[in-house]
Amino acid sequence: MPVLLLITYRPEFACVWTGHAHATTLLLNRLAHRQVAAMADRITGKRLPREVHHQIIEHSDGVPLFVEELVKTVLESDLLCELDDEYLLRGPLPALAIPNSVQSLLVARLDRLGTAREVAQAGAALGREFSYEAIHAVADWLPEQQLQQALQILVQSELLYCRGKPPEASYFFKHALLQDAAHETLPRSKRCELHARIAAVLEERFPELADQQPGLLARHHTEAGSIEKAVIYCGKAGRQSAARSAMLEAEAQLRRGLRLISNLPDTPSASGRSSICKPHWRRR
Picture 1: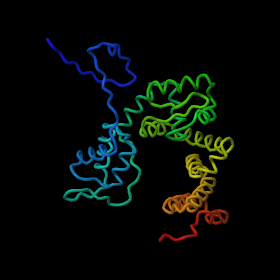
Picture 2: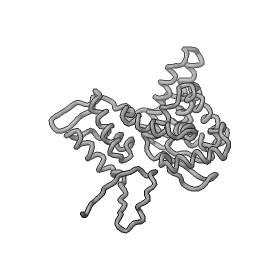
Picture 3: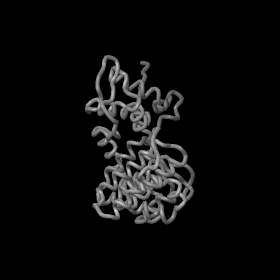
Picture 4: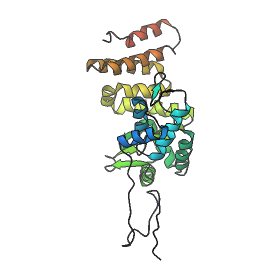
């Protein structure tokens, strides 16, 4: 009898039948941005705000499961106001949290990695993309051979993509949610310690990056609990954005610095530091 057998599998599964003439392999690519927005609206039955579309596109990376779960998260929140044919935001849209259903799937994949999980966590703290030179400097508790083996495991598992070869290689997480999950699995104390280590490495070994991307240093110092240094870098980032007339970005960075200052003890030096982040321009 003629039979059609359809099998779905993850990329890490080793197929033994792909060499046969009667077997055809179809690669399921990610959804394009327009398809993600259309899928989200189809799930809700109404048009979602542009800001919601943007976050769902950014966080889902075109993976239908992630799109579906992120849409459910938005609908279950109190962020939207329902009208006849669309949804409107009730206020500013915060960063979307990872849905519990997706979080458990991603954490389960990370848990199966052994030592490579710690490298994934260190990479997640560095960012969506990081260089071999940076991860080698940060994950200094591992011998170089073990680090390369761990990175190879992450690449083979398709949790990371790799460009080039060590020591000139760069890596990036396949999904933004995967990076978020790896970062969230870090205990609070270890997360602070790791971000403090990253900030120190960037300042000591990559001073040009610290000059070019002060917002990046501000983020790491904030996560590390080094509020005073974070305020200084927020001020630098704000002035840098203002210098290239990116006023919305400048305002956001300076306000972030002012919010951080509000968490410092009320001392004369703290009030002096606040001048670092006071904008000297007006929005028009």
